[in-house]
Length: 167
Picture 1 (tube, rainbow, N blue to C red):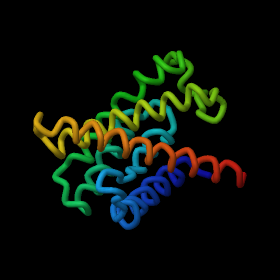
Picture 2: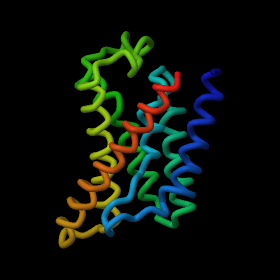
Picture 3: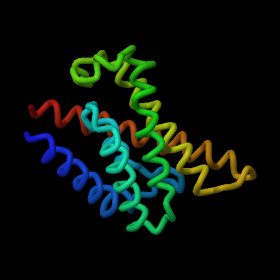
């Protein structure tokens, strides 16, 4: 598939999935999946960093627009998009020369698992910290982060397994 078409499809698919389906799920008062972080995980690792940061911000802002959440999704997604290269350097031990050939499908599952979990937990912690914006509710932030991160990660790995299995 053409790279620009792939990015457009991924952007629109995750936007509509989050807005129309996943935002309507609230399990036990704590658990809400935020699967749109998959955009940061699946975006090709090439030199167009500013376009990637802009699209991440735009996706988060679009979700904020439909969710009426005041920019917290945009900030959270932009933060992990900015942090992505740092985590790839640390977890996968990649250098700038390796970025052109980097592919998550060719990496060991343990490293991919650590990478995805790190991005999801950081995203959720920032999201819930900004949503509560109080140190009095810190236990609520931790509980929401933990449960939603687990649910999001399970959905992410289940979805990627099903998609990869069909190929």
